[in-house]
Image 1 (tube, rainbow, N blue to C red):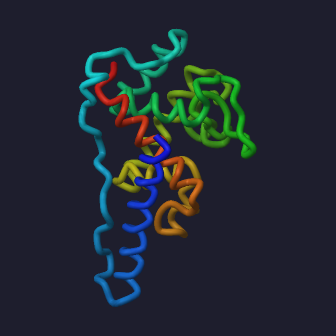
Image 2: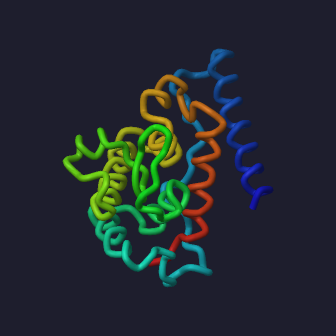
Length: 180
């Protein structure tokens, strides 16, 4: 798994370097960066299998996936990376709960960050807003992790930590693709 993560980070770094070099050497403004597919192919190992969600949170994740149109596997991957399904998780930045939502974000969405059901819905809705804004899952995930301002200023993932976060979510998402 570490080897796959390092390979993904290397590919991402090369792609970003190429994009920066193209811009510095008179490349077309707005040239398309490599895209990461919006939906991973179904993983035969998990197709039709139940997603690994603690039973007490399953209905919250299913509801949030239906509400936003996301694959259940994507929300599960985010929760695994963000909190390992710990409803009382809290980050240094005060992001809280299963999907590590900031209280200000939950309040903006008129949802309770400390209630696991509404925390999952708040995280899913915020991620949907970011995906609508960036139209790329890698950038939406980077903004979810580091904030949209940091992503806008950096033109992508603003740090190695954020690149690692995006790679971890995408790897778990692909591994779970097709689960229900």
